[in-house]
Length: 408
Image (cartoon, rainbow, N blue to C red; front, side, top):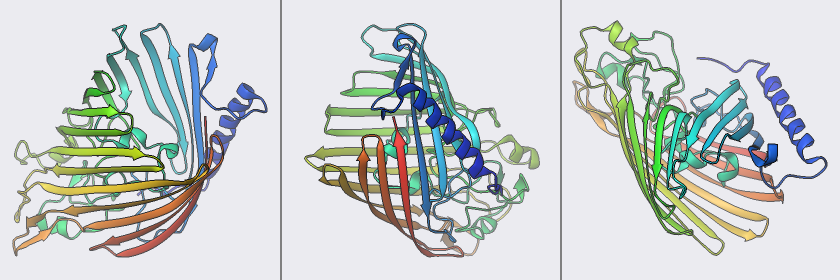
């Protein structure tokens, strides 16, 4: 497993310094309230930077697919939109993060062929269409510090290595931060979350419709839990979402996705693996409502990974998970709010030769906290995360974290 090097904080600190320097050139001594425009408004620059410090996490409950803790990291990002014409724009985001360094998070072209704006076509490393949280996973859109477990918690599934038997899979329960299997890549590595919110996939996306009733579909190289830049299995994913927003205060959506998940490395290691049984399929629903000082959101996702059945006792059933969360935020004062989120992932049982057992350890979390707006674009957050798991080395953990966030 890759460990963050001692220089990681320095790299991100330099990036954050450059971010602040660019902002300083743009607004002098004034705090920005919106993206900075250049070239007569044809180029827009936006950015965010956050510093998060929290408890040590011995149970790895908060570790992400970048192998860093979500409550112990520095992060900075700059987004640039360059409009070549009224209908064509180029967008890119560069992100620097502890343990990762500087990486291109997103880069794509967006074409709007209709004057009405009812149709967009995007190609490149594109925004996700599945679910609701993936499109608002930036720190300023999250009332708390942690992420819903559907989009962050590391399971024992890997695209580049699989267990040969059901017994081998069950022996890894609750250890998704570092798991190794006998088929495929022999190096120990972390598993994947149900949906990888912190990485975007590569492909083509089409969005159609007004905000009141919108549809989007994407054709990409990876899957929900394993987005790709370069394809590793000669397969593709199709994902889509329908959203209904009759008023700005209420929305409901439904999403689905299906794509090839298992990499060619696995089949090269076991040429006798039967065809098929190598995909990820998911269906989700989401809703959001707000009134007065209140905001409530929720999602529910049913997800299946299928892996090739190899040696007895074979894994013949899909590796299914059911996950969901509900969060609420209430604004007590114009600058002060409190929030709470409860979420859980449960895992289906599989045959193991001596009976049935859940293939992964169920996990639950309750996070509660508060946020205080120091000034527009500058926010201070504090959270407590209580975690429980039905397996693994550490089964319960209470963690605290604080975060300072700036954006424009």
